[in-house]
Length: 278
Image (tube, rainbow, N blue to C red; front, side):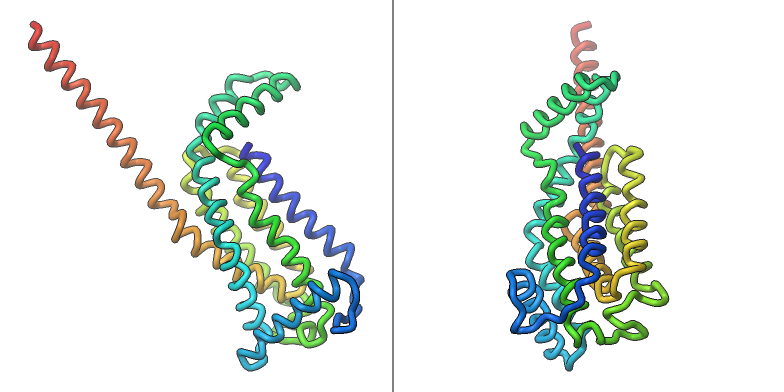
C-alpha cells in the first residue's frame, strides 16, 4: 500500500508538469474585466491577494509570496497532521504488511489480488487510510497551478525582482531549485528515518522526489521555486515538531527494551518457581 502512495505522489508531480506545459502559452493578463471562473475569480483574486500582501511589506513581491505560502501552509496544517498520523501508523504496520507480502511469493494476478485484499483489510482494521498521505499534496497542486498563472499573467508579479532573479523567469543560477531540492530531500529523509522497515522503494523515493523538484525548478518561474523553498522549510520544521524521527526511534527502542526486560523477568520468575519445586 505504501508503494502506491509513493507513486501517487510522483504522478501528482508529473501531472503538474503536464498542466504547466499545456497552459504555458496562456499569457493574457488577468484583471477585473477577466471572465470565467478560473481567470476572474481564482487567478485574479489570487494575484490581488499577493499584491495586497506585498504592499503590506513596502511593495516587496518576494515577501508577499512568502507570506502567502506561510498562510497556505498554516491553513493546511490540520491535513498535514492527519498525514503525519497516517504515515506513523503505516510505518508501525509495515512489518505486518511485509509479512503478508511474504505469504504470496508468486507474482501471478490472483496472488497479487489476494495480497492486496489482505493488506487493505489489515489497514482498514487499524484505521489507516492509504491515500490520506497524498491529500495535502493534491490540495497544494491547484494552488501551485494558480500561483504559476497569477505570476505570469500579472504584470507587477511577472516583472518583480528578488535578489538577482526576475520572479517571472527561471532562476538563472539555479540556486532556488537546488535549495528546494535539498529541502525536499531533507523532508523526505527525516520523515522516513523513523520507518522500522527500509526497502528499495522507500530509499528510491528519498532521491526521486528531490530530483524531480530540481529538474522542474530549472524551467519554472523563480517565484514558484521560492514557494517550494518556503513550503519545504515549513514542512521540515513541522516534521521535527510533530513527527520527530529521533523521538520516535527512542520511544520504539524504549518500548522494545521494556518488552525484553519483561521477558527476562518472566524467565527469572520461571526459574525461581522451578527451583522451589525441586
